[in-house]
Image (cartoon, rainbow, N blue to C red):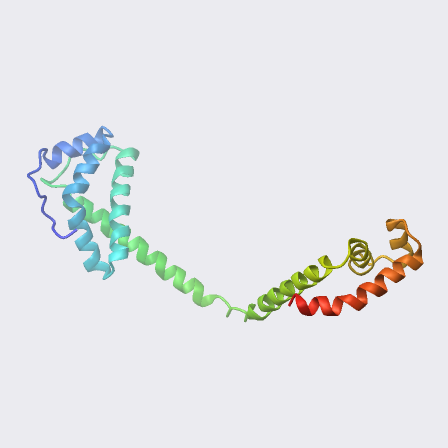
Length: 195
């Protein structure tokens, strides 16, 4: 958007495009955009000092122009060019945007100071460490014979009593105790291997 002049001579007068807009022909708005978007953008940049706000203003101005024709018939074009009308719309859009930014700033200033939020890095690190530890324990348990591993999982992870674990496994309580004893002797060495 460097020049407010079209690169090729316009094929239709602004008055003809205006009449086409009155008939709700979107191509007419496209032609007006091609002709005047750069001029509207240059005005908006100078008004706001921001290319981003100017981009938004151009978009809003042409959308508003289209909606204006959709709501009511504005009658014939009063000037030789539609540019003054488009700039007036852009000016109103810029005012509305500035007013909205002011209101937002005032609203934010009235809000209480945010509560301090704890740093979650420590809890995330602890969780990662916990997962690594669990993976090491699982690897060590997988090295145990299946009957000892099942016994450890039922008694320590599922928190069953020895009597309940014996019922689940279909063995005597003494067998559950013996399996736990053997597993407790082997697990420290297995944990060291899997860290």
